[in-house]
Amino acid sequence: MAASDDKVRVDIGFEGGGTLTVSVTVVEADGLEQRLRTGENGVADLETEDGRLIVALAHVLYIRRHARGSRVGFSAAT
Image 1 (spheres, one colour):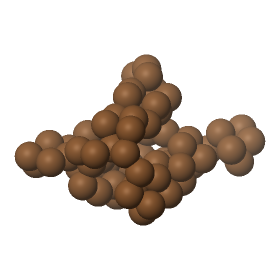
Image 2: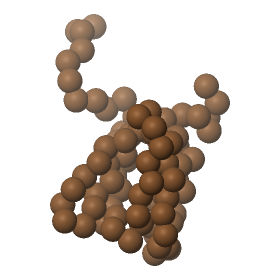
Image 3: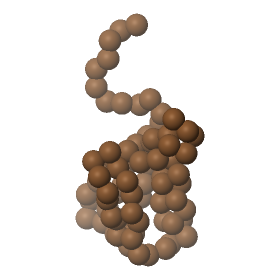
Image 4: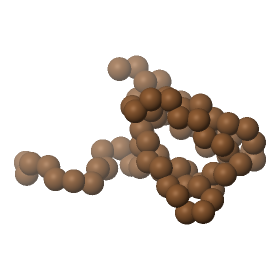
């Protein structure tokens, strides 16, 4: 997998309290973060593992990147 294809999980927080957690490429996460920092409106098209997601940027309050390898759940002891 090329570095541009690496995936990262992000939480997208919306006005009204809704949150969506998706897995996107690092490039897409960087682009979304940059667009939010500059106050850009419009929509962001994100390719997720579940399909295409179109996000209205005017309604996004924050994004949070999960640390690599952080997952909630159980794993085998090593």
